[in-house]
Image 1: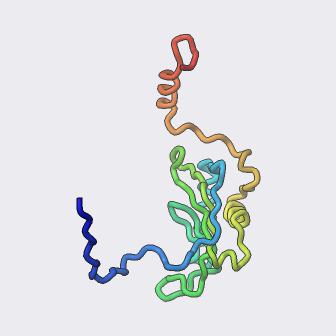
Image 2: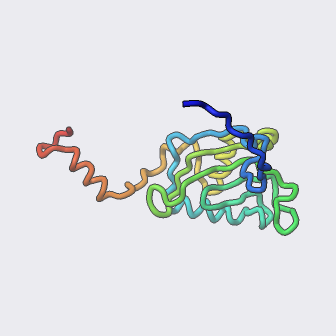
Image 3: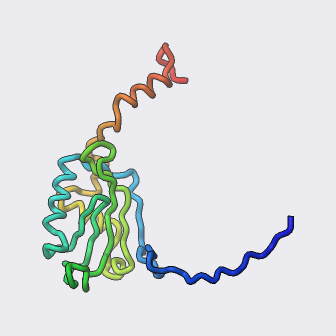
Length: 168
């Protein structure tokens, strides 16, 4: 086999769909281990509090289905854009996990501007969870979530156990 050099790509680079910036936007990221599971009632309280403190209502939070972003102040830009407000970090979660209406918090991120403003991952998590009256240090005291699918879990357990109850 004879290798041939590939001709140089002369097409212009298309940059209008670029998803990331050239500078790092995340300075610190922390995985929440074990992941923190918030029950339905706690999840509702947290989302309601985040809605009251939304950046469009004069607050500093922007909540969505994947988490809460923390900003330095309300968005004051043209047509509701962030304007002079700086993104400080976010608390990321999975909604409806492990079951419907539960929230599983799995990551906290602090941006470069957040670090410059004195934010830490623990402080950011405490700030967000305190809105719902949850102490992040007492995460182990939270109730165990229900299994994702109790019938499937039983079927798997029955397959792995022998007729005499011993595991294989």
